[in-house]
Image (cartoon, rainbow, N blue to C red):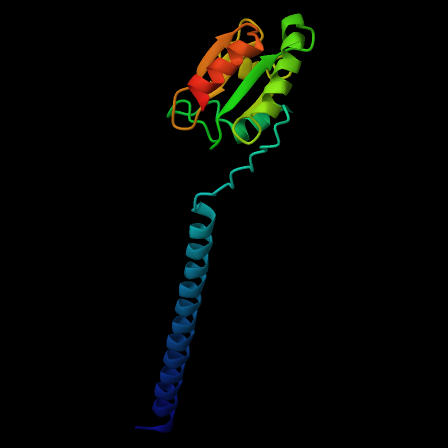
Length: 175
């Protein structure tokens, strides 16, 4: 073997070694990158567990927005149907500021909130500001009261009941 052939073979061998090591290094880099992508995908696709909002058991009537209703009470477009998110029985008063019976019902609900402090929660939703929510629940007359108990279907009442009537409903349907 002459010197020229030897240099060609040596050059080919060195080129082959360089190519093999470069490909191996690139392949390892790809594996690391694929692992990073897979890890990020798994982290991003994991279902987001939203903490349940703390329930206010102070006995005060809580005026809530449509967004707060969705967060605290139920999703509007839930394919599984109505599912109350709370763990404490609740009353939702669908009202409007201009409605005289709604205005008259306000102090009654405040007294009941204090009376049943820690046992029930009373929410108020202004139908003028939550029109999509009112439509979803078929609210056509106000006041309309929605009675909620965990793991049960809600009950609806239209009109402004007296405090005695509400006491009876709370004791029979919610507690």
